[in-house]
Image 1 (cartoon, chains in turn green, cyan):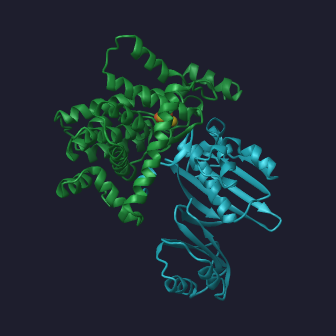
Image 2 (tube, protein in one colour; image 1 turned 45 degrees about the vertical axis):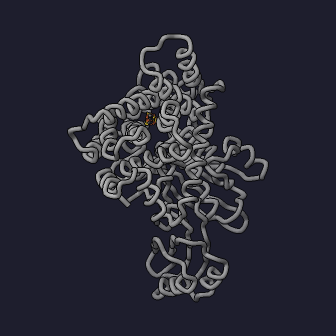
Length: 294
Length: 221
Ligand code: SF4
């Protein structure tokens, strides 16, 4: 198995193959399963993601708490009716990423990528970019392997959960994973994928995990939305040949160190940040029926 | 390397909203069920740390019970686990504790019926991945994602060799192995993660080794 992004890129470039293929081969090696079995499992994940995007864009999603739901549709309606400012692919990515995260908040079925809190970004960008690049189903599955390869490096060298490393570890990782996968699908090199990871993750450093009332809803849904936007733009920048001065693995290391020094109040405990705002506290008191000062 | 597979990152397929607090909670419940080996009559669940604080919003309670019922993280019945447990006559007791634990997402599950009980402590480490850190008071480390053989035996020499001889005979490869004991010279628990299915015959053969007190097999969850 590759231990970090540098080794992953090295393996891909020396063999002249894509990151997704390195991931599939490594998975075969570790799990002792056949290529077909591994591909089938990922096809299944892709189907679940597609369902979630569709549900979020067509059904009236509402979470149990009533805090989230309906924004994915709202954005689609806006795109149909108004001359929107940012790009079409970008806004689809934002809307689809929102859709999946709204389905998650409503206790619907999703694929954790890498976690449920950040489950919108990888499928949201995948289906938005696919609208433009028209990939085959197999290329769409490869997108997930590439995203997985980056997530694998981040998870083993840092962390991927808000409780462990803040939102930079959760939404940040998903954003970096998506950026790399978009680059590959658009025909970029493994090295460009790695650059996209660095560019995307650098813009997520320091992001704290501060969910209101401890629920994976506020700010999570909107962070998924903006994660999708950053991933898409980071991919374009890397495809343009822009490079990160700090190498990718060092950016991941920086994320790790920032996460280690981040106070517990800002790591999913709902004690700081947006959770501790006046409105955040009021929502918490209302949902759990507890007095405000607790 | 904590994460071994691409499906630890792209996966699991699950009912939301939280991989650590919903899917992870369900998986700990499911491993507890599998260690117990049958449907319990009563389940006592204790949540610590962040589980204790936020379980309501994440459905960690509902998910844990779903796991105890043997449901997977993506099972649509997950939401209705309390009602299903009631129908099946399983009594559920839920507690929260403010005792400090090493990991913020910790749950302790005690399952019992007239024939016996087990107690499992698990932690949810992120992305739906879990670790079991204690079974019946034996400290250990178990992922629950491999075929696992658990052998309770008297704490004396030669036990590891005797068990691994049987595995060798059936060509079962050991991926990870740990021996845990509460006190020297009493009982010990051998936890062996293997690459392939451990058949009925191999289990029987291990059971017949002198000083072995019990053998159980966990399927990957
Ligand atoms: S704020 Fe916390 S719970 Fe919400 S998406 Fe970020 S890491 Fe996850």
